[in-house]
Image (cartoon, rainbow, N blue to C red):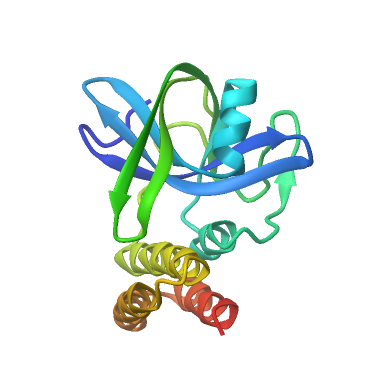
Length: 194
């Protein structure tokens, strides 16, 4: 199985938690043959620290990624916990974890870098298929939306406004480059932030 050499592939990580399954979009980093996940504060991080395992889900569906980024309920299957709509998935085990922090536009945040070993791929198997530019713009809009929500929670109104502007820039790209599902993802994001 190959991901982008020395790059980042967008995946949805599913984990098991005390209250059930959890799904969170994030970048899977491949660096010199090692696979890394940089996971910020939240249930995915807690679950990975507790269980040491999860599932990488590949989907080209921007709506699934948008809904997962907003913490909404996405349909999951069990054994292993994974996206019902995943085109491809593979379980992984945590080999190593390093706690760290980052100080960025949202202030200081805790994170853990997990080195993972990816198991056998299921469903579509073969190589995961990349997303269209419109779908990628919808994903970027979802990232800006989730960060804007954090900025608002922290009272960082200027930063939230800037992130909302970035969201709208990506939304304009979706209008030019995206299909129906990418446009639907942007509408879901906009509705959630109203």
